[in-house]
Amino acid sequence: MLKVMRPDLLRIALFLFFAFSAPQLHAQADREYLILSGGPSLDEWEKYKAAPHDKWWGNFIRSARIRIAELRKQHGPTARITWLVHRPSYERRNSRQSNTSPNIIADIVSVRDRYGVNLVWFSQGDDVINYLNAGLPRNQVKIATFDFYGHSNRACFMFDYSNLIDSASKSWLHENDFAKLRRGIFTRDAFIKSWGCHTGESMSKAFKKATGKRMIGAIGKTDYSAISTRGEVLVNGRWGG
Image (cartoon, rainbow, N blue to C red; front, side, top):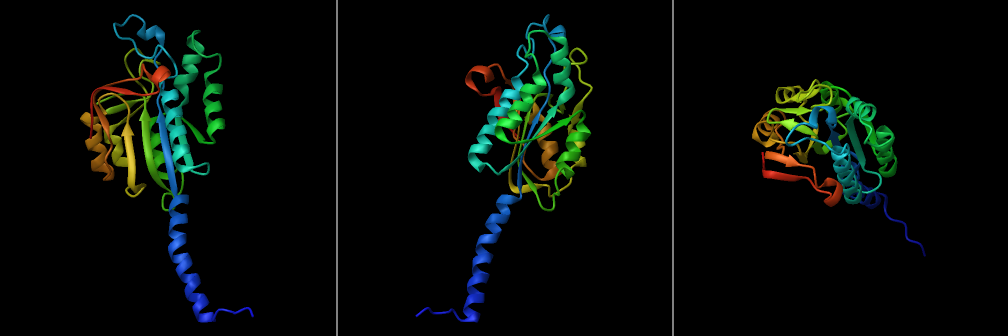
């Protein structure tokens, strides 16, 4: 004979099921993984320097692709991965240098399609701040990881360094801009790392002050020359922050 559970016991069982399982499902659904890619330098500005930057256009794209693949493997096919890319720099590199890919923008889009990520083009630092603050409803979706790949100094992400102007940048995110970030946009266990030069010397402190979160950064220079062969960013110094 089929036994029917008493209504009071059924309610208790359902309550315990949702109490223990729902938070886990909710936590997985409400995490976003962010990657930020700055743009490459142009050969016309760099070729006469003793240590030129970005002989290969894909330094910051390949490193981001490797990180995207890692996140996809760790968190599965439905994880929210968003990739912010400084489009003007890649368009300019594509039009001004003949030794690059026939269509850089198409190559970047192909990474989006292969890994199923949300590709967001941006032009200025405020675009990045705005996305972090409100790209998704931050009361529902928190940022779990944030990686930056690009040119930088101790106080600034430089998205178009030596791309529009020799050894300078007109598109940047300064450490003072971190004060514009809203508190509570990151998860409690958020992993944040800048893979740009020198950012562990000052920017990391400014980021911690503004957000309460640690940002790992380089004390010294970073080296992308091994990205195309070994798939890793090296630091000529140490990681700090």
